[in-house]
Image (cartoon, rainbow, N blue to C red; front, side, top):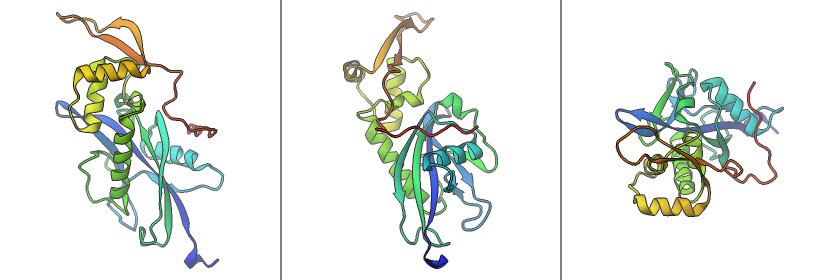
Length: 230
């Protein structure tokens, strides 16, 4: 096969976290500034070329850690993007993963002139087709929030039902009825009452819950999770 007809394989990751913006939390993603052409100076998703000795998930986790110092609590393959004209350098197929990290872990990541957090719904014009990729990742996240328990990856170890509802509201961009939300969550069986309450306050203190750790965030079938970068 000639090099002109060769297809390159790359891996990228969309990482979501709730980050403070003023007095509110905003669903945000980290982007890295490209330092070479094509699209030098433009923001892009963390990633790079696939490595022959690694699985795609391992490459995604390593590239993510190398550029942002983030270790996601949730990592799932999103989609393969391979339109012939998506890169001016030739045919490049990108296998994209998406990840969720808690706010306190996101705060420990790299943030400098070349790594910056952006509101996921208010991005600049990104390199390649990365705006399309983020839109697809947002759709997937919001769809899964309706029926799965992945909000766990955006919360602390313990939380109130009000805090859990607020995470859903931020991600889904719509208010939720507290009573209906409570009934839905309690019926799902994914929460465990810790028996503790939030200290302080004049009114009845809210109860603290945690997710049932015997349940997985996602069903990956027989696939094993990627190894953490050393």
